[in-house]
Length: 458
Image 1 (cartoon, one colour):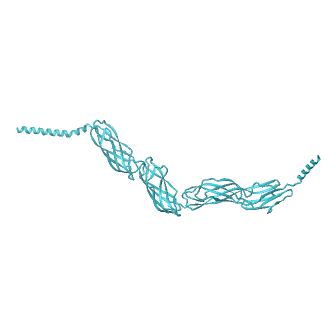
Image 2 (cartoon, helix red, strand yellow):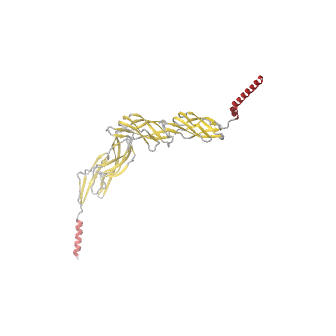
Image 3 (cartoon, one colour):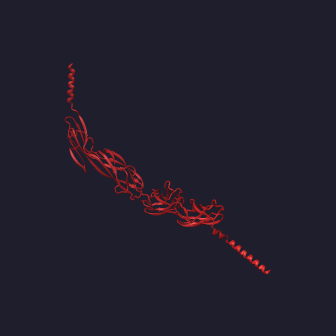
């Protein structure tokens, strides 16, 4: 029974006498080396909202490695002795101690990386704030995206945007005791230029937009003065105006061929446009674009430029004369004076009234010609009132038909012409029978004279 106990004691003593063997590898130098490049194309067009995709790379490399194989009498093995070396600026690494404790981080790992893209002294507008993208180990990379706006009036072919990369890294590690490791971390910021290229394009700016006779429900002309503010010389260029969404300005002639349209060149174009009858008196948008042949022989259309066009209200008319007067049972020529209250000329106008009971008319239309804005014109009508017409004020419907600047037939809204029915005054009746009385007197005198002469002859 004593043999098992003896064997157990022997095994315990054997285990105690065996020295454990441990292996540890520690990188003791190096630092992150950060680079950035654009993923995909770096060429963008003026006037675009773009996404700039960047790849952030860590190319840091450690050149010294401490390999430690240990037991009771183990010693560290390294290619160099203990050292402290200034790397670049505030980047450094120090290896001290025997390397008995494993490091949590490598000196080449970029920790808590933050990247921010800015406009610098360029006109490019960066819309995305700085972003944190986590840790980037050596020989690894991460992708980050920034939203930007390329203004329509950029002039240079190339711009450099400053990209700031900030990170923390293991700067120093020191074993204070066999089981105590102290580490120091440093913060590093560096700026990397990101180069973007701007495609040479024709880019337009509408310098002036002058409407001609543009009123609600009619047609007229639109005169545009346009400048090429881009860096491309357009060939075989055609300038187009386009309806903007549901804008009531509808192009009738939408294209004007202008030929060569060089950078900084200025051209003028004239278009026929129609205005919807549903519009109001206000300013409405029109889009303008240029289609041209670029330096590579490709047909390209520029970005649109939107310009506001003032539209006048529909031509309206008013009656500014006193009410015309008609006597029951008689014919009358009434005179009506109209005024153009609109902003444009009404061409070849004709005024018409609608004679309703108790009136009739043998001539209800009057040609009044061209009526300029604010101008007065006079119309004449023949009107008859029935014998039994009651005295009082009547309102007759009137309208004016005319031609607009594009010779389209237009008709005004209906408005009212006041006509008064009045009994003829007594003095008027007396005046009206004076010729009859005069005739009777003359006949009476003649008859008396005849009778007197005949008596004398007898």
